[in-house]
Image (cartoon, rainbow, N blue to C red):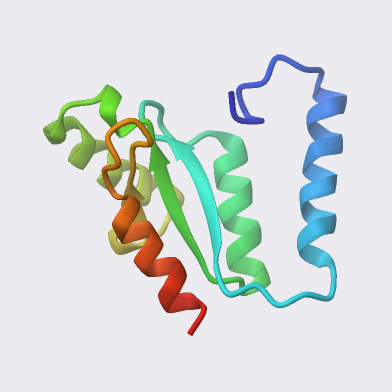
Length: 117
């Protein structure tokens, strides 16, 4: 599971959050950050924190909604719009993806390539 759903102590989750923050705080250049969010759930607290951090840091990002194959197309569209709204981002900052079917993978690759130009 993602770190938001991992069955570990709050102390361990905080340690992970500190590691992530420390990674992004280093003197590096980031062309694009991809935040992974499970489409089957509403945006979680950690998703809000990550997007808020990326926005405040001025880092370019896209949210990849994973596990789309677990939902029908209509529900995917509803969830994508809902999660974008919950996170306070534009719908075009969200890519619906599935590693099982390959859905959205080409779009995600294109965005990565465009960010690296």
